[in-house]
Length: 381
Image 1 (spheres, one colour):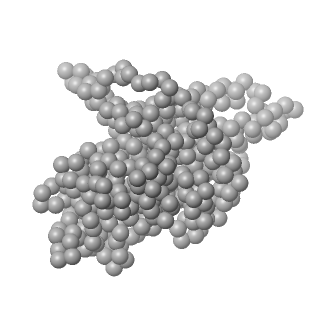
Image 2 (cartoon, one colour):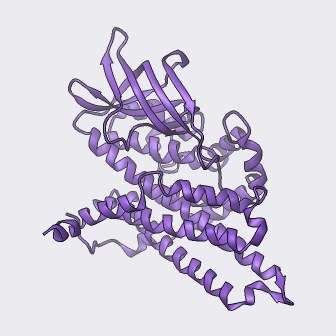
Image 3 (tube, rainbow, N blue to C red):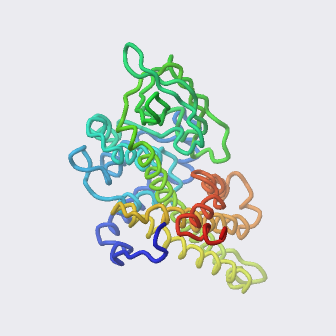
């Protein structure tokens, strides 16, 4: 059972000067090169994002390697710096696979403790030349098996709704072996892996069905450490998604406040009406709660705290609800134009709804949180 009142250095919850400067640089970068119209334009391309911008983000700013140790080609910072980048990408609705590549796959490799795998893949992730994802991490039962053939391990089975599953260069997947479940890294040749894009609500975050048909793979880590690696990766993903949701909520609130100050009705800005003020105040309160929950989850991830599961669950609930409220008001308080496909509010609303269930539902997170802090056992008693 986790402590209900964990101790943590308050300084870890505050933004440093370096992180503040990074935020300014990234916000200017996304404002210049990744606006809503840019997002729409690149959704129609085969990969669904601007590959030149992806390379610039890795090469000019070094976002991909922020949380990667220097020995593996990264900058050697922590998840706290990466969370700043994720928040700004969420604010801009950046549609490249930053979440699956940098937050999920890179951390899965680090958590595995497999130096050979880290040396093989992390430098390419850090320099932006390798996109990666994880598959089957949140499955109740393993859908992939691994068998040893003449050339080595071969994967068979399927994993559904894999983030960037149709385009990722590297797929990390837990598979069942005779000795138990183990993590595998796969750069599948086309003839051994079928990838079928899924039709999803949020087109800015592509997902796919991945079917392994004797795909060659390399074992990563140990059988004994697989469960812990998968669990820690998922919690890191929840913390990363929470940072994204805070960024998206911030954009929704700022854009709505700007609009209600400009839109006039009955000879005055609609933002001067008390009902509108109250609704925006509710969004602000929810956003501040989300910032706090996200900051705590980020700090726990950065220092590999045993409180990460608790923090990740709490952030998943609070940030999902804040993002949902912020985007709902984004649409409603923009009136008729908020419902049109041409308006960016539509894109943020879809991102909010899809993010709610990305790593589990809010109800599921509440149940897990109650179990972690011992409330479920007390209720049962």
